Length: 135
Image: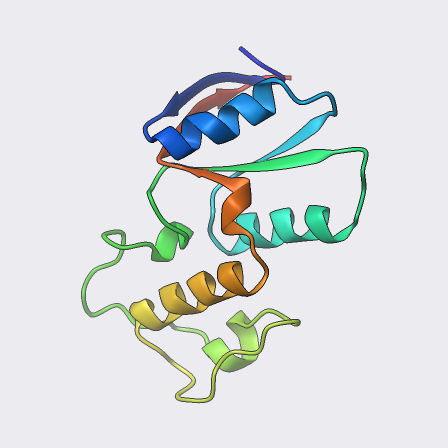
């Protein structure tokens, strides 16, 4: 157990590297579970706060950004039921021009583009499942 996480299963070498940073950080570390829309914005907000008091690490069980929109988590014909350009877009990262109701692969790509635009992937340990958290 370390700093609140009682069970983490790292699957990839990159995950193990990020976990070792978490284990041996001299600063308190904020752990974010999931690299979907909420996880990406949580990490981004901590990073952009420019706080030198905390480290931030994200943990994502799949090998990619996307959360519920990641490859293999959606059925082939899934479309959004909310207008992506009006409701699903981040305030600081406009949704590309196009139809309002989009295929799930477009949402996945939007989340990947967001992560890349703000350099967020480096904060995540992909292929890492968090099975319990304790305080």
